[in-house]
Every structure is written in structure tokens, then in C-alpha cells.
Amino acid sequence: MADTDEASIAFAREVDRNKGALEADLVALEPHLRSLAFPAEIGFLNEFKKHFAEYEKIDRAILELAVENTNLKAQRLSFGPARQAADSFRDSLEKLGAVRAADRCRLESAITKAVLAVREIQVLQAPHIAESQDSVMTELEKQMDTLQAGARQGVTTLEALVEIQGRSDLAAAVAAFDRFQEISKEIVKLSRRNSNVRSLELSLRQKPGVTAAADQDLLSLQEALAKEGFAATR
Image (cartoon, rainbow, N blue to C red; front, side, top):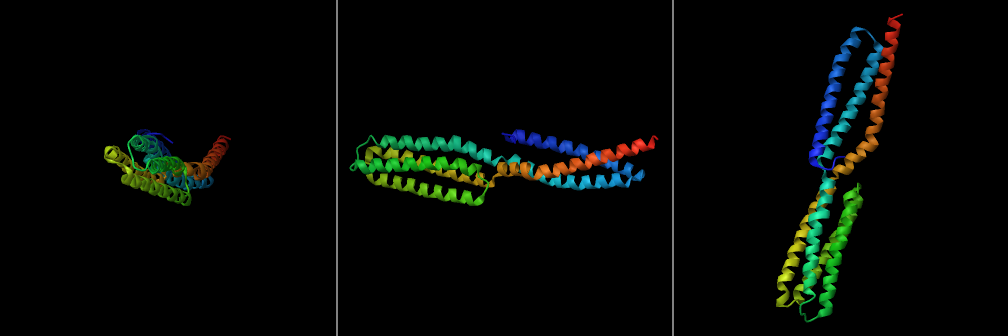
């Protein structure tokens, strides 16, 4: 699995070229076998064509999914823009801790609650991106939604506690949190598409069996042709 869109597209084009060459060989071979009236060899060729069609269907699905790179894109968002927004949220809230507040304990508690909730969402993003089962992703999303609600509640509490000198920092925190939420939605959307995970599963679970069957068909065809060639020289 390539780690960039450009590499994925290049690999997909290379695969298409190789398959095109193979298909051209099949087109050239079949008339020769029929003209020589080799029924066994024609049977092996037909079996190979059937397995190759199955292989091509799986391979096309793998390539289409792999080129999307949605899991890698989600991962980059999580480690990049989402982390930056979370850090900005934390930094802005930490500045509020230094300003005067009527209820210092409630203010510090609300800051801690909001920051921890965002950090926990970040922690949950990684397993969501790697997960292949919809039910598990749904459960992770429920946890993230609960944490987002908790962080938002913390911000709402701060709005009632922060005095005028802290309003600009609070506004910056709110903007950073809104940014974090939007990025988180995009991460979940990309992760749900699961193109890299699904293409890897197809590669590891379905493709090997079909590939082995096609290889065996070719081997049987080669052996049969070798016997015919030996008999023809006697």
C-alpha cells in the first residue's frame, strides 16, 4: 500500500499495463491451441481465464480503494491540523487561568475538563482510523460525541466565569475548539470510508486464494504443453 496519492496512482497504472500485456498474450495463445486441437490445454486456459476474471475484479476493487488513501489522509489530519487545533485550544484556556475570576475553583475545573475531553478525543481517533468493523467505529464515535459535549459544556461554563480581560483568550479557545470539531468530523468521515483498511483486507484474505488458483492453471497448462511438445518430437 503506497503512502501518497501519486504513488498509488503510479502503481495502479503499472498494474494496468501488466494486465494489458497478459491479456494480449491470452488473445494470441487461444487460437493456436484451438488450431492444434488440444482440448486439455484449452480447458486449462479456460480455467485460468475464469480465475483471472475473479482476480481482476478483486484487484480493481483493491486499486480503487487504495488510490483513495482515506485512512492515511485521516491519520495525517489527526496528527497535523487536529493536534494543532487541540494545542491552540489548550494554550488559550491556560491563559485564562492567569486572569482574575470570581470563582477560581470552577474556572480551573472547567478548563481541566475541557482540555482533557479534547485530548481523549485525540486518543480515540487513532483506533477509529485503524478499525475495520462498523459497530466498533460507531461505539468510538459515541464516546467522542460525549467528550465533545463535555468540552463544549466546559467552554460554556467559562463564558459565565471569565471577566472582561479574559474574553479575547476565551474567544480564541472557542475558535480553536470549533476548528478541532470540524477537523474531527472530516477524520471520522475519511476513516469510515476505510479505503486503506478494506484494500488491505482484500489483498490478504481474498486475493491470495484466487492468485494461487490462477497460478495452478498456468502451471497445468505449461506441463500439458510440454508433454505435447515432447510427444510431437518422438
